[in-house]
Amino acid sequence: MPSTRYQKINAHHYRHIWVVGDIHGEYQLLQSRLHQLSFFP
Image (cartoon, rainbow, N blue to C red; front, side):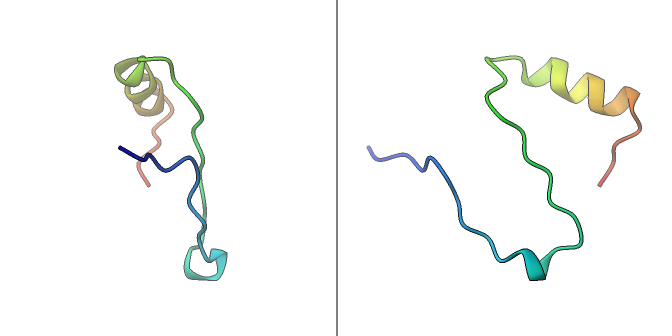
């Protein structure tokens, strides 16, 4: 099954763009840290 390694986006359609790299199975840790930083896009 093919997987997408990248996605091309038109930056003019967005005010901000955030990119997160490989989190090595630590999704919950990422979510927890974003919450601590009051990151709610």
